[in-house]
Image (cartoon, rainbow, N blue to C red):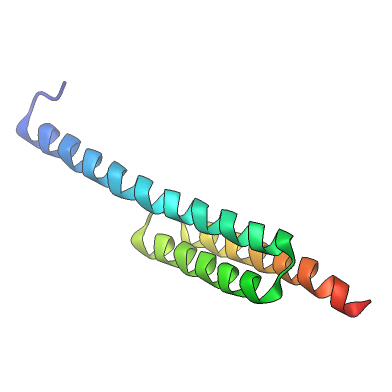
Length: 93
């Protein structure tokens, strides 16, 4: 238990931040999951929209400080690479 006023305030702030960050992280995970599902379905139009939405969610999370900017960038790159690899391969044959 916090003993000082400043420690009590810090605890309140941490609880608020934790709730906010959890909501943002959940949104990012859902966006990435939707993008991967669209890529697996093989529909290029839906996949492009879903990857774009996931990329925006990751960028927003990085801007808010929920994710490190390089972590978000790496995830965006991997998702884009996965999309281009899975959706461009059938068209090349």
